[in-house]
Image 1: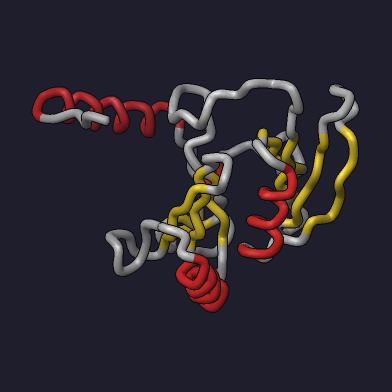
Image 2 (image 1 turned 90 degrees about the horizontal axis):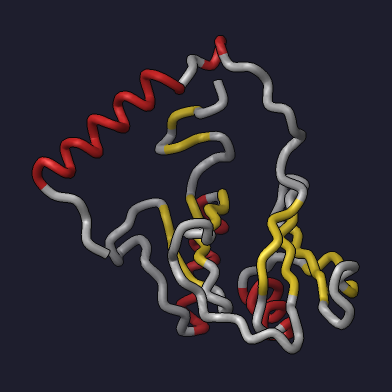
Length: 172
């Protein structure tokens, strides 16, 4: 994907500064959010068993429920525990012909998952042992490890505390 350069890049950066000044409030001035948090993120999978094996067996996210989708007969709806009361959910849609993943407007670019330094290293070891390709430490990116699941979903294991970005608190 081509990146902006020269005058176009400077215009993009100036726009970001304008948006920050217009919308980003100091923590003391922010209203409380209107929701309790993420209950679950729902994604579409190609194969239920392949997805379970990847998330539970390889990544270590316990499968906590597997039921029929209430909106589509024959479709499965299942959930993995991703910590802190958050769930990662999937649907399959038997009989549908879905396009492969495409990075486009409205698509999920990636899910960034907070992990401890110890669990980060364990994830890296499991991925290496399984031959899963990733972008991460020793491969161009510090504190993050990026992979794609069997469905094309981008995942980032981010060696950072929840509510922080680059060791700076985001939530005040």
